[in-house]
Image 1 (cartoon, rainbow, N blue to C red):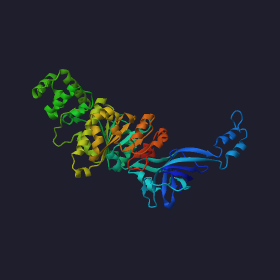
Image 2: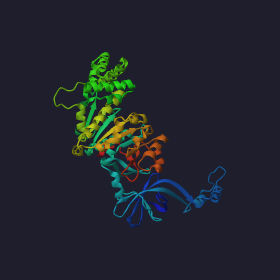
Image 3: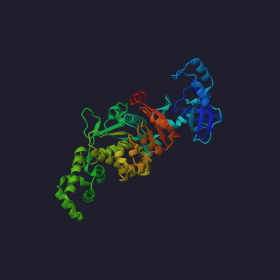
Image 4: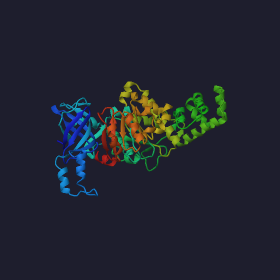
Length: 503
């Protein structure tokens, strides 16, 4: 049995007040249990406190003030202790009901309230109805109750959370990268899900390579793999794998330039990028004019050629392999993800233009690969989660309106067993339509009030009473809110190296 904390003194709807027992500590965010009749258990969260005393009235306060000297110090401590001691003063905890369980252990949303003067206690390991719902098959940390970290595992159910999209939000240094590493490690252990990470800063390989199953569960791609990392594969593309949408997503084009790109693709089909790099601008203009009757200016074609050339150099774009049946790097990557592996694409050595083009191309290939499967084939393939860092570059208010591949992923991917994990420091920069589709939120420390307000408005669970808790989150602490949990739970995320050693 856990520690006794006090007695319930008032309840109205989900609002509750309880007297904190003498010599007991209750903190903001503490998750407590009210023992109801018929073995009902009501789970509550303390979010505020107040002090009540027989001296709380103005007359009482004035009398106590008279016991202080002219400097506001206690003139006679023994006398003051006499007045304030005993049962003259009580601490009242203010809480909200989260859910309750019946004698059979079934969990329900708040529909009733406990009786007057029921016992209030701390959370214990025998509160299995609540803990089983929060455990999940992808562990991320331990349940946090106030200042105390309980040795009670908390995670998410990948089958419920991955395809319904995930958001990870926190300022620099709040622990976003560590959370992604722990989640990746849990996915490696699980073998039930694929994970595609676009690693903007090349920060994940060093830690994930320490996992005992790295050789058969982790695949790493880099456009310029180093000799000292023999298990990192070279990422290369074929001309016929690059489509106009991949180019238009990575740079700003004028209307004539966009028109020219799609005309070139229409005329030359899969070879459009190869030919635009092979021929001079004048020859291209003449060819397009002959096929479509439309003549473009030289500077229009020159800009397209310039961006295509830069991408060719950065992304190792070459002719299609001449070996029959040989699978391409992209094809192998899709196969690895389908088999439930973690695929890490390192982007640090690539320019922002190349990074956006590659992220768009691979995500689109993933979406089409699963969309073209039959229902029977899709039931065998593992669900895949795509991790997108600094997501506002792809899913901001302006970007989302263009209906790029990531906007399509948010709205369409669920039916194809694909989910998107959006990682960002400033959720207010993301389009509202995107935030509303994220059914699981990991909220780490956020300094900006506008960022916290945006998540409060879009979160699937009511987190208004957790404002103080969210504002004061330390590094590695978060609030997880998902549509299948009864409430948003506070979590202390495992440190990756400690989690790896334990597992």
